[in-house]
Length: 368
Image 1 (cartoon, rainbow, N blue to C red):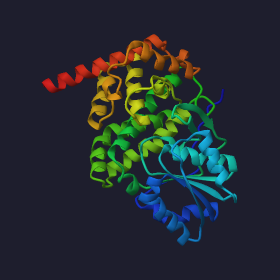
Image 2 (spheres, one colour; image 1 turned 120 degrees about the horizontal axis):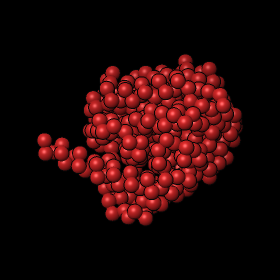
Image 3 (tube, rainbow, N blue to C red; image 1 turned 180 degrees about the vertical axis):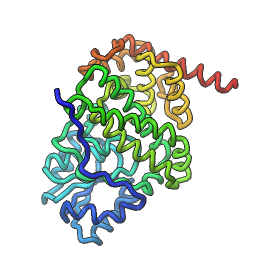
C-alpha cells in the first residue's frame, strides 16, 4: 500500500484577511454561492457578502439548515439554479462539510472560511454526514481537498472560548490516534499508509497547544488576537487537519462518534467528546502516568470533560455504556488490529477508569 499525503491547495491565515480576500478569491471566478447559518450571517457573513458584491462578485446566499445530512445537502443543491464558479462555506464544521458536498456535487472550486477553531474539519477532504436526528451517518470522501482555506483570527477570536477548547480536544487526539494507526501500518483517510510528514505535523500540533494553549484560551476570553492565539488556531485547524487526514484516526474518534447511541447526556461539541475519548484511549494503551496527567491537567484548565458527570452520564449503567462501546467497536473496521485490547468490555472499563482517575486527580489537587 502506498504512502499518501493530501492537503488543501492553499491555506491563508491572517488577521482581517476576510475583508481583504479578493486577490485570493478572484482566481476562482466571479460567481459564488455562499453557505452559512443565520447566526454567522448576522455576525460576519452578510458584511462579507457586501464586500464580495463591492468587488464585483455575483453572490447567491444559501441558509444552512442546521444539520449536515444528505437531505439538507440535497435541498441546498436544489436551490442553486445557475452553476457558480465556486462555493464558499462560512461557519462551523457542519456548514463547511455541507459546502464541500456542494463543491463535489457541482464539480466547482471550494473555498472554506471557518469562523471557529473548534475542529480540524476545514482543511479535510471529507464531509462528516449526520442523520436528521443528529446521529452519525457516514464519512463522505471527496476527490479533492478544498481549493482555499481562509482563516481570520480576528473573526475566530470573537467566538466563545468553549469552541477553542473543543478544538484543543480534537487536535490533541491527532498524534495519539495517528501513532496507534502508524504502529500497525494502518489505513488512513488519505486512502494509504501514513507518512512521516503527517506524524511530525501531528506532533507539532500537540506541542503547540501544550505550549500556547492556556494563554491563547485567556486571549480568546478577552476577544483579542495574540501570537499565542494565532499559533493554536493554526494548530487546531491546519496542523491537526493534515495530521489526522494523512496520519489516521483510531479509537478516540470511533468512540466519540458513538456517543449518541446512549441517547442521553449533555449537548457536547465534537472536540469535547473526543477529549474524553482520548483519555479513554490513553488508559487503554497503558500510557505512562505522567503523560495521562499532562493531558488531564490541560483539559481541566480549559474546561474539557474529564468525568462521566461532565458528559451528563453520571448515572449511566454498564449496560448503557456498553451500547456506546459496541457501536464504537463496530464502527471502525481496523479497531481490532490496534496493539491493545479494544473489546467493548475493555472500552467500558477504561471509560469508568477515566472517570475515577479524574475525580481522584482533582481531589488531590484541591488538597494541595
